[in-house]
Image (cartoon, rainbow, N blue to C red; front, top):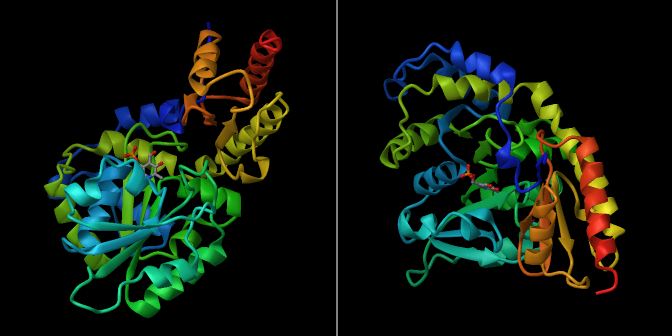
Length: 349
Ligand SMILES: Cc1ncc(COP(=O)(O)O)c(C=O)c1O
């Protein structure tokens, strides 16, 4: 049975071009700054993200943690949206490793309002932790890949600059956001002092993320990358793939994933009892609330898997499907047919 995998866009595999480039890569010790492809990738990432400099890291989680460590001191406070990946899905590294307090603000648009952030910034008083950093996220993972508007990001960045607080952007899927908004990645990154972007999700590289910012920020970030074990020596294998991942046509291809997500969302929304907010399908994620169907998420995930379709349960009511280069439009049609047949077989329940 052919498996159609909609669990995550992290399942993407390197294409033939990436594999060939990896096998032909000239390698060197990247900790000594001698891996030519890591150097090239870091220069390219800085250019694409519109920053002075960038570094390559093994994961997005490490990129965000290095940014937190570089921007803040222990005991300081970071303002971020309640469901931000840094707070919800990075194993508490901000507290456990960086010693930071997290001040979370709830906003289902994926980005706190300027007023929310303004009132959360601590006054200069010895009783309070110092507010050192604001973190934003695009696309927003937990809210199903929604893309906060640039105007909202601009307002927060304006406030951060006025208050001399730095702003870090978790842009694991910044590339998807750029495609959705129809702007260059650097335009979005322009509303942050530092930005992390992943190469290993929709772009298809097997491993790696980049962190970009000013020269002094990146110089310091290099130390924390080494401290956390991110000095990886002969990285050219990986960076060869990362360079192809960042090619404009590879980024533009994400539009196919977004189109497939919209088709999937519209199809799923027609299933009896299923709620999908199609207007919130901004990129490659689809969240479907199945609480008014005969299924729990676990049961539906299992039925789909038995029929060759893999999706994830977010909780007992909501399932998540993520489109990627591993799933084409014909397979999206098969997924919808499979769902219809499962729902039809249960219509009497
Ligand atoms: C928004 C966001 N930030 C950070 C990460 C962490 O990336 P990694 O899995 O490479 O550690 C993810 C992973 O899915 C993510 O969705």
